[in-house]
Image (cartoon, rainbow, N blue to C red; front, side, top):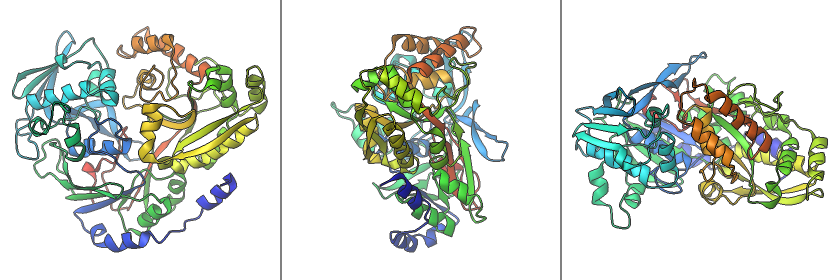
Length: 537
């Protein structure tokens, strides 16, 4: 498919026959005051966030079906919409907490009536087992816990049945907020241990299909690649009882079908809609559209340093100068979000993150750089993107393909199914050139670099490895942002990212959602998953 054909087809709102059986099956549900139907183009692949290979869409289960000790508060944005508040922590399973005078531990006191779905009380034993699991299973959850300075089961001490203490390895600005992200969710350890084995001590296989939580919703039914059905937990103690009894998350791959469903009022909520649809539907009085810039998040092009040409930073810089940024922003972002190219200085002037990189579309500069390398005649490379993000990935890949062709780099586009993307791109890390997206859950620059620029981290899909960068991240991750050492070290980190470009920023995206006007209570969250606990009709 040529770019012009794709852009022409993308502008049509044709709805295929696949919409008909859906419309026949949902009208009664869509009009019921105790049920909300959410449509999304993504698909979950597990009910257990800790499982190796669990994809990002699956994180919603940890949010809606499990509790954490604490959560983030909520704030009202200038446009009147609601957002999580990174600067405010509130109780969830813990009714209160106390930080020790020396700043090296925090003690949590559990809510006395907190209970799991089977009626058994939530105890400090359950909390410790769950936190032990998070720091021990390896992969993404264990590294996420490490970001907050939690690395060993020895740090979690049971004081009594309703009291648990978390010990710091060192004072850290990230430990408390890290306990409020989806990863450290609290599991019914008695249920999990009943299904654990010597080969599977953390009950990964059981919890993959059988949640055991205390959260606001239970999983009533999961039909992979079709739907996920939540039913309210009427005994939830973690917060205000949800206003709706049932939430149906329907997976509809076709964006035109999702748009038709929300515009007709056949469903109530469409999550993570394309920027094009968001811009166009703003004029539709039957639909309410909310778009929030995703904090600490970038859409990027990643040259993989395991691929020989990209081991030369001049090749990576040449690629950065051969990207048609403005066209991508118009045709993939539809000018929603924030540009991340055209920075005025080669050295960062502040530690604001994200910030525009000092590259523009300059094909002469790109050819000049490439001519200095062993690849002056160009080369061939696969250019991969996640089909689950085709709304922005497809036009972006086609435009990059055209730009690279102008300097002699022949990019062959590969479209990888969303269910396979995380394993191939982030676990195996074997894609030579690919589009990626990462948004840091903890809203500090050092946290973004911890995940995206440090050796062997999950979201470092470029296989970038630099001892100085590793050391700078280690030195800045835990210290306060007003520490005198913080700003100069951060500027050095950003300067290295500018110069070495293992990740080439395209733009900062919005999270766009659409809903019928009668829906209230939507809150933007950093994890970008539908938090259905606060939705109401």
